[in-house]
Image (cartoon, rainbow, N blue to C red; front, side, top):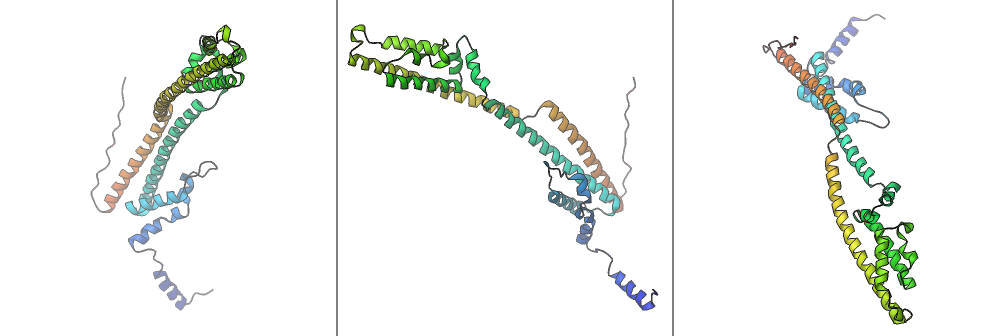
Length: 294
């Protein structure tokens, strides 16, 4: 196809209209073409199945840095990209630290408060005085109170404190609660001459119920004291869990140190290039090599 002089002149006139952006805003927008196409985001933004970083937030960060640093030329754009990547990864390090703290606090709380059969069996394993161990725990005090309420219900129904009722806690295993209930039964038993008297039985029953109610009030007060003590201890454990383990802290610290070194190096080099582009006299960077000799 032969290009006529008229067609060539028209092409030249049209080319004058395609000079690219001329304003500062247009030039900044043009520099973001690679970002808009997602070329930089593909190598920096994590897009896995369980971990998905926001590509929109990354692009917004790119626009903010490009608008603020206003790079000119491929080399300055490369340095700005390095600044963007280091900044994004530093934010990821902060996110990792927050995640470690969340796992440490929440998992520790769950491990301490999840129901576990061994926690209950631990009371039975204290052969010296299992009731004492239970009274020093909010859970144990609540269990003792439940057993006493069962004993009280049987006294209400049967009118007396039977051997079967006394042996409810620990399946008949000797313990201080059974001993106290036996002592209460002996103290509240009617005299032999009134053993068959309805009035004597009613009075003995009332004394038994009053003794059990007194023990229940003591247990409820003990449970509240244990709950307050355990709450204070739990608050302290959660406060301590806010600080991740030394291994995790060291790993995050090394990661942050490397990124900060990369960030400041790119910022310093970008500043040198931009000052040189503006015609300033920029001295060569000072590099020092230190070695130790034996």
